[in-house]
Image (cartoon, rainbow, N blue to C red; front, side, top):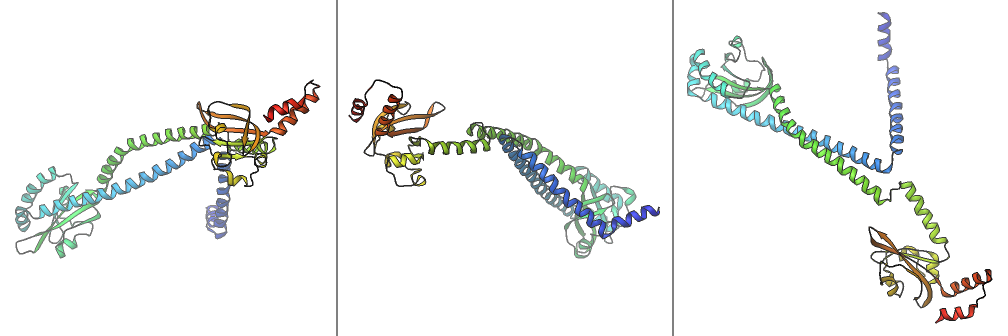
Length: 378
């Protein structure tokens, strides 16, 4: 026994409590790190799905709490008003007033029993001017004082009101109204009550009617979340963000390292990328961010090459870009059998000629470069 007492003293000591608090504080970051690590190991598609699922669940729980709170508040108000109206109507009955004045318990019972059978209230109680019961659903309670301590407003101030108190049948929502004689003197009281248990049963019925629509809504949210995550994954070419980021970096490096000029345009013929070689060959002084988003026709004075036969690829055509002879190719970016953009590659005519001649000499081909140069210049 002394060991248990010492243990209790140890746990109740400030140092022990501080130690427990410190342990709890150290546990939370550990679980947080584990959850974060587990979440980071999921694929991007699953992370999107889990995030939407978590958010949807929180929203559904918040909606459930809000609807339950609003429904409970509205139910209590409506039932309270119903109890009050019944109490006022019963207390105003001339037959009941006369029976209470004469303390005719049999007459009071004959008047109230039919009303109680038609009413959905848990009980109807009639008391005299001192709060002694003249009628009760339990005959053994007749003659005893009304419980709850909430009858003074009706008996002393002749007011009708709604209250929540605990009585012989448990906690209940009550409507109370005074019984007054012809002179206005309070001679009794009527109390109509609905137990809290009965109200909770009604509330459960109303809430349960919302469960099926909410379950359907949650399933719909899950379906939409899954479809959305699949759509995002498809838009990202079935790659993870890290893979996509690495690919973009590689493409950017490759874009700037090639020998030819490169220009990428979208389906609206607006520039989405242009490398340094292209800007140098076309004598463009603007930096790349300034050129991004501009229409290709406002940067390069050659419209036929860009707009002609959009679904057809072009290869090694001699064209003029900004009064400069170039050999250009155009490749379409096809998505869902529709061109979503184009990539234009080009090199200066003189450079292309020089490369062709160098390659021919390297392979010891018996050709002359002068006629080739002349044919290109035509």
